[in-house]
Structure formats: structure tokens, C-alpha cells
Image (tube, rainbow, N blue to C red; front, side, top):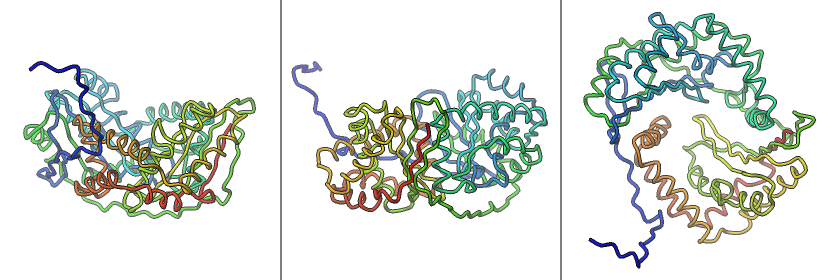
Length: 427
């Protein structure tokens, strides 16, 4: 067939597409451990996530969640830290460990053919890490050095202070790293946190790539034979203690020529009916490169290279934050323009043309998320860890497609009131 190059191809809007989330297999190992896996790859690679209730929400002592994650590869009774790193390098694998607000994750990337060799190493790290004293000393020294460097950066300090202003600095979502908290960590603190929060019985396993029944059975052979010691995850509650001082101006560098602006408010998590519509409104305000904040403050005023508005939903709450860095001479002008754009969205309904552009951006990004096994897995992981399913995914897509200018204006009037926002400016 010869292509007719004199005729342009038909261009379709993203809202015309039918979005289908590829199904995931949800099974249990022989010992009852949950595994969520999907075969969606064409390359012989696999990603596996082990997710635990081991984020900052579960800390009994400040800084222990990140320390435990940071030291998890520092040695077990069977392997030294050097041996662990050598085994990963030998197979060309990558093992990442992180601790977020609610969850801790161990993520393995490897060629599918090496999976059976690496699973026992991961199991040993999860169940038998020793957190040696000498490794803890190294971790504390390195972490404090990095923190001292970051504390010179206005962006870093602004991020710390805006979360503390919204939640309170004793709340897990508002607490931030301090030198004294890191110095006070002991080996017993980390061992206790590891034992209680990295209990394999409370894990969720997620796997994707070019995988199938064979790879599931490989996991079952290693992890399905472990005797699980079930324990109830402690249900913790914290009071939000929002700072009554709505505006903070912080001098971090007397010679600074640039300041970091954070304008934020508390906002519900994904379970609230306003969350998904707000994703669209947030896109209009500052969620992508063509947003109103970017057009005004970057393109028109030339105050910054970039300004963004983000929604940050956690399990037990969330925030909406506008962030940018601008020269000290235009700090107050930039803040003024941010509120001006919020006010416009409250007063005037967005045009259908502008709304279509944002819808296509959001849904186009979603199409990208559905292309490739690892991005599909991340989408499923978010749904499952937040108690959602495929039907919720479909509902969200329909909201993106059908939301109206009138509905968005009402949403702006509800959430874009200046008195509900905190401002932190750090120079």
C-alpha cells in the first residue's frame, strides 16, 4: 500500500480514546502473601516492588523510617554490605529502597533470567538485616553532611517549612529532618522499626515485565515458604496543628539573590469526591507547561523559569502547593500574580477551548502511563494501596472527559480562597 503524503493524517483528541487499564493478576503465595502481577512486557526484564507500612506515619522516633530504608542494604547475618552490592552488580540488577510519608518500598529491577538468583538475596535483606553499628555511624555522618548542604538551599528550607506550617512540625507529614534527630538514632531504634514495620506478613508484592506463571512460582518458591508472623499494623492518629501565622518570610542567606515561594493549603486525599475534578482545575492553574501560572509568571512577566501547582495526596491527608523560585526584587509581585490567577478562575468560567487543551494534556499523559509494564504497574500500585480498583480508574477518566467549565468555576470558588492558603518565602 502506498501512502498518500499529500493528505494530512487525521488528528484525534485524547478524549476520543477509550481508556482501558490492562488487568492485573491478584493472587496469594502458599503462605497467604499477596502478589499483584501483570505480563505486559516485550523485553526480558522484570520489576518487583515489596511495599510495607514503613513510612514516616509509623515512626516511633523521628528520622528512623528513612534511616531504616537507607541502611537496609548495609548487611545481614549472611551477607556483608559489600557482598550485597557485588551480587547486584554481578547480575546487572538494581535494588532501590525508599521511605515515603506512608509506605516503604523495596524495588528490584533485573533481567528475568536472573530472578531466581536474586530473590533469596532480597528475602535475606528484608528478613535478616543487622544494621551494623559501623554502618550506622557512616549513614549518620553522610546524612548530616547532606542535610547541612541542603539547608543552605532556599528551596529545601521552603519545602520543610510549608509542610510544617500546614500540618505542624510534630505531625508525620509536617516533621522534617533535623541534625539532632539523626544524631540521636541508635541501632536498637532501627532494629525495632525494621522488625515491626518490615514484617513480611504485612507486605504487598507487585511484579511486572515479561513475566508469567514461571516467575510467579519463582517468587512462591522463595517467599511463599516463609512462616509469617502476623501482627496488626498499629492504627496511628495524629492531630493536625496548622500554624495560625499564615505568612512567613524567612532569611536563610543574607546575600541571597533568589527566593523560594511556597503557597499551599490542606486538601483532601484521593477518596474525596473533589479530588479528581481538582486534578483538572489544578492543571489549568499550574499543572503543566501551558498553564495559566506558567503563561503569566514565566512567559509574560519573565519572573521565573518555571512555576507549578501540585496536588500531593497521602493516605491520611494531602496538600495543594504552588511553588516557584524568583529573584528577590520580584518576590511580592510574583505572589500577587498567583492570587490574581486564582481569582480569575473563581470569577470567570474557563473557555471550552482552554479546557479541551487541559483535558487532552491530562488524558495524553494517562495514555503514556498505559504504555509499558512498569508505568502500568505504578498505576495499579497506586490504586491498590489506596483501596481502589479498575472501576475507580474508569470513573476518574470519565470525570476528566466530561467535567464542565461551570463545575470547575464552582470548585475554584470553594478551594481558591486566599485566606485558606499559607505563604512561605525563603531567601
